[in-house]
Amino acid sequence: MKILTKEIWMEVPARRAIVSIHHEVEQFVAESGVTDGLILVNAMHITASVFINDDESGLHADYERWLEQLVPFNSGSDPASGGYQHNRTGEDNADAHHKRQIMGREVVVAITEGKLHLGPWEHIFYYEFDGRRKKRLLVKIIGE
Image (cartoon, rainbow, N blue to C red; front, side, top):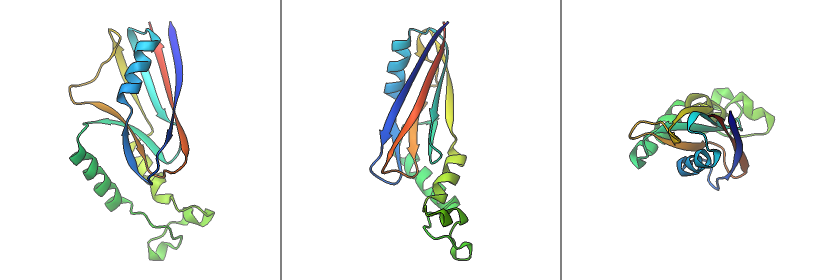
Protein backbone atom coordinates (compact mmCIF):
# COMPACT_ATOMS: atom_id res chain seq x y z
CA MET A 1 0.00 0.00 0.00
CA LYS A 2 1.25 3.45 -0.93
CA ILE A 3 0.16 6.62 0.84
CA LEU A 4 0.96 10.21 -0.06
CA THR A 5 -0.14 13.20 2.01
CA LYS A 6 0.29 16.73 0.67
CA GLU A 7 -1.08 20.17 1.42
CA ILE A 8 -1.97 22.93 -1.01
CA TRP A 9 -1.85 26.43 0.43
CA MET A 10 -4.18 29.03 -1.05
CA GLU A 11 -4.28 32.79 -0.57
CA VAL A 12 -7.06 34.20 -2.72
CA PRO A 13 -6.93 38.03 -2.83
CA ALA A 14 -10.67 38.39 -3.50
CA ARG A 15 -13.47 37.58 -1.08
CA ARG A 16 -14.79 34.84 -3.41
CA ALA A 17 -13.22 32.98 -6.29
CA ILE A 18 -13.18 29.63 -8.02
CA VAL A 19 -9.63 28.33 -8.57
CA SER A 20 -8.68 25.26 -10.60
CA ILE A 21 -6.53 22.85 -8.62
CA HIS A 22 -6.96 20.04 -11.13
CA HIS A 23 -3.45 19.97 -12.60
CA GLU A 24 -1.79 20.19 -9.19
CA VAL A 25 -3.90 17.23 -8.01
CA GLU A 26 -2.94 15.27 -11.15
CA GLN A 27 0.73 15.95 -10.40
CA PHE A 28 0.31 14.56 -6.87
CA VAL A 29 -1.26 11.39 -8.29
CA ALA A 30 1.73 10.95 -10.62
CA GLU A 31 4.16 11.64 -7.76
CA SER A 32 2.43 9.08 -5.52
CA GLY A 33 3.04 6.16 -7.88
CA VAL A 34 -0.45 4.87 -7.05
CA THR A 35 -2.02 3.11 -10.03
CA ASP A 36 -5.20 1.88 -8.34
CA GLY A 37 -6.64 3.72 -5.34
CA LEU A 38 -8.41 6.80 -4.08
CA ILE A 39 -7.60 10.46 -3.61
CA LEU A 40 -9.24 12.77 -1.08
CA VAL A 41 -9.02 16.52 -1.61
CA ASN A 42 -10.37 18.38 1.41
CA ALA A 43 -10.75 22.10 2.15
CA MET A 44 -9.33 22.48 5.65
CA HIS A 45 -11.21 25.69 6.35
CA ILE A 46 -14.87 26.25 7.19
CA THR A 47 -15.38 28.97 4.59
CA ALA A 48 -13.97 27.16 1.54
CA SER A 49 -14.99 24.23 -0.61
CA VAL A 50 -13.63 21.68 -3.04
CA PHE A 51 -15.94 20.52 -5.81
CA ILE A 52 -15.97 18.82 -9.21
CA ASN A 53 -17.76 20.22 -12.23
CA ASP A 54 -17.25 21.66 -15.70
CA ASP A 55 -14.42 24.15 -16.28
CA GLU A 56 -16.70 26.70 -17.93
CA SER A 57 -16.80 30.38 -16.97
CA GLY A 58 -20.56 30.75 -17.53
CA LEU A 59 -21.25 27.92 -15.08
CA HIS A 60 -18.93 29.53 -12.54
CA ALA A 61 -20.78 32.84 -12.90
CA ASP A 62 -24.05 30.95 -12.46
CA TYR A 63 -22.73 29.44 -9.20
CA GLU A 64 -21.84 32.91 -7.94
CA ARG A 65 -25.29 34.29 -8.76
CA TRP A 66 -27.14 31.24 -7.40
CA LEU A 67 -25.22 31.13 -4.11
CA GLU A 68 -25.62 34.85 -3.60
CA GLN A 69 -29.39 34.50 -4.12
CA LEU A 70 -29.56 31.62 -1.63
CA VAL A 71 -27.29 33.15 1.02
CA PRO A 72 -26.53 36.81 0.32
CA PHE A 73 -23.54 38.54 1.83
CA ASN A 74 -24.54 40.84 4.68
CA SER A 75 -21.94 42.07 7.16
CA GLY A 76 -24.61 42.93 9.74
CA SER A 77 -25.66 40.84 12.72
CA ASP A 78 -29.32 41.83 13.05
CA PRO A 79 -31.53 39.15 11.49
CA ALA A 80 -34.36 41.67 11.16
CA SER A 81 -32.31 43.58 8.58
CA GLY A 82 -30.98 40.52 6.75
CA GLY A 83 -27.89 40.09 8.93
CA TYR A 84 -26.61 36.89 10.49
CA GLN A 85 -26.32 36.09 14.18
CA HIS A 86 -22.89 34.54 13.52
CA ASN A 87 -21.61 37.99 12.63
CA ARG A 88 -22.08 38.98 16.29
CA THR A 89 -18.73 37.23 16.86
CA GLY A 90 -17.01 40.12 15.10
CA GLU A 91 -16.81 38.31 11.76
CA ASP A 92 -18.72 39.30 8.63
CA ASN A 93 -18.58 35.88 6.96
CA ALA A 94 -21.72 34.00 8.02
CA ASP A 95 -22.76 33.68 4.39
CA ALA A 96 -19.41 31.99 3.62
CA HIS A 97 -20.13 29.24 6.15
CA HIS A 98 -23.51 28.54 4.53
CA LYS A 99 -22.08 28.58 1.00
CA ARG A 100 -19.47 26.02 2.04
CA GLN A 101 -22.23 23.73 3.35
CA ILE A 102 -23.99 23.94 0.00
CA MET A 103 -20.90 23.33 -2.16
CA GLY A 104 -19.33 20.72 0.09
CA ARG A 105 -16.13 20.13 1.96
CA GLU A 106 -14.24 17.60 -0.14
CA VAL A 107 -14.11 15.30 -3.11
CA VAL A 108 -12.99 11.69 -3.35
CA VAL A 109 -11.90 10.43 -6.77
CA ALA A 110 -10.87 6.97 -7.93
CA ILE A 111 -7.41 6.48 -9.37
CA THR A 112 -7.25 3.94 -12.18
CA GLU A 113 -4.12 3.09 -14.15
CA GLY A 114 -2.32 5.96 -12.42
CA LYS A 115 -4.81 8.65 -13.50
CA LEU A 116 -7.80 10.42 -11.99
CA HIS A 117 -10.85 8.41 -13.03
CA LEU A 118 -13.20 11.24 -13.99
CA GLY A 119 -15.85 11.88 -16.60
CA PRO A 120 -14.95 13.81 -19.75
CA TRP A 121 -15.92 17.26 -18.43
CA GLU A 122 -15.10 16.79 -14.76
CA HIS A 123 -12.53 19.14 -13.28
CA ILE A 124 -11.45 19.76 -9.66
CA PHE A 125 -11.83 23.24 -8.14
CA TYR A 126 -11.24 25.12 -4.91
CA TYR A 127 -14.01 27.60 -4.09
CA GLU A 128 -13.11 30.43 -1.74
CA PHE A 129 -15.98 32.18 0.07
CA ASP A 130 -14.05 34.39 2.51
CA GLY A 131 -10.64 35.06 1.03
CA ARG A 132 -7.80 37.44 1.71
CA ARG A 133 -5.99 35.09 4.08
CA LYS A 134 -3.95 31.91 3.82
CA LYS A 135 -5.87 28.61 3.86
CA ARG A 136 -4.93 25.01 3.18
CA LEU A 137 -6.25 21.93 1.47
CA LEU A 138 -5.39 18.36 2.36
CA VAL A 139 -4.60 15.89 -0.40
CA LYS A 140 -4.44 12.22 0.67
CA ILE A 141 -3.73 9.45 -1.81
CA ILE A 142 -4.06 5.80 -0.82
CA GLY A 143 -3.67 2.75 -3.03
CA GLU A 144 -1.46 0.26 -4.79
